Length: 116
Image (cartoon, rainbow, N blue to C red; front, side, top):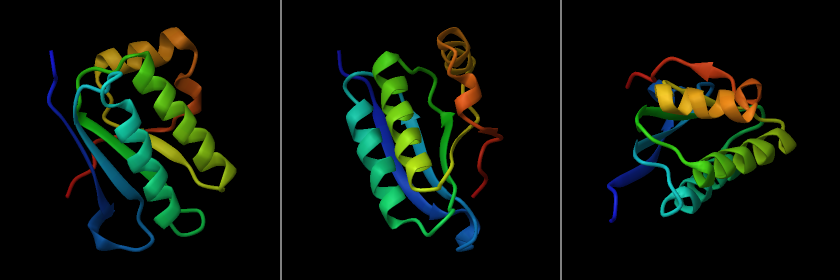
């Protein structure tokens, strides 16, 4: 059964070049969509200036499986290698539990939902 999924880069929050680049996710981050999300984050990293934060806004995503978590972990590692930070905004309860159960919670700074 296919699930609805949408992910897009909305650019710098508020149009400020010093603000984070926001990747907005809607739907389930599962094995069908993890690669698409990882590719989008990788492209955002390539377009980001030095020390630019990448924020993955999860306020419209309610589920993430191990494939999705692995994609986020690989993207986080790529961000770290390039001197950038990958943070998660408004993760669902399920996502927070997944991060906690896997011991990966300390690897991701958490933010509130991104407005705008």
